[in-house]
Image (spheres, rainbow, N blue to C red):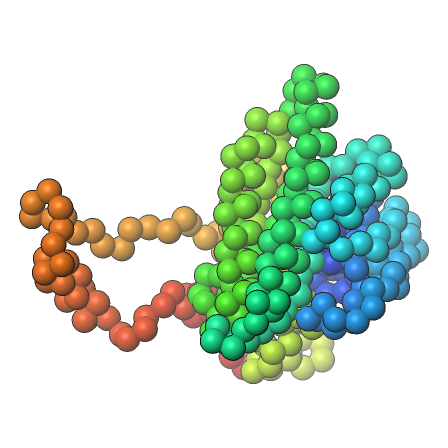
Length: 313
């Protein structure tokens, strides 16, 4: 019996641990040959010496289960290393079909205390890292499409966060990077649709070393009961988005955890005010807008965790 991703090849970045590992294993289970990328630094802030062990271990897991996998130790925030990553997939498997961008680091601090390096490093790994791999994958698919004279199978699954949707006071760099990834994804989706390529972005909830602080207040279930925050529950959506079945899903933002997937609409206009004359004056704006906010709770934000049903244990 054929599998949904038979004959396809995939790259998963940050795949040595946590969510990326679960995604790489799921793609392999569905039949894909996988390049397991991980820079292998032990610190979730990107500290420590790079190490091939995490990527090699996951690649070995895939091979032991009968799949095909190669490991890549490389920093996706480096343009040339990202080029080498895509080239490794093409050299190993003849082509690239699927790109899952997951690699990231955290350097949390309040905006008034954050250093320039803390800002730059998180933007570089998350946002520039997504751009770098996407750039080379997109060039590969465009060239293949032109050569064949028709669309190709190309799938991009990017990783954002509800920190972008709801805000995260101690993560201005992370929230900004994750918001940028959404913009990158929708732009890429429009640019590559003509070549048969889709680009979508997920906001996963998963208990990993990256989110151990976020989910510190959420109780882990008793042994034998479903852990809705296990990374393995996010991976099937990634497998679906990578498959031919998802050809009609493009430029979408999806929140996923456990047994839930929520498709997030683009922002809607909440209120609209028109000037009495051609343009507004300060006084008129005060008369129209101030009462609108006076009836709302102070510092009201879009509380995505409440809207989408995440409850503390």
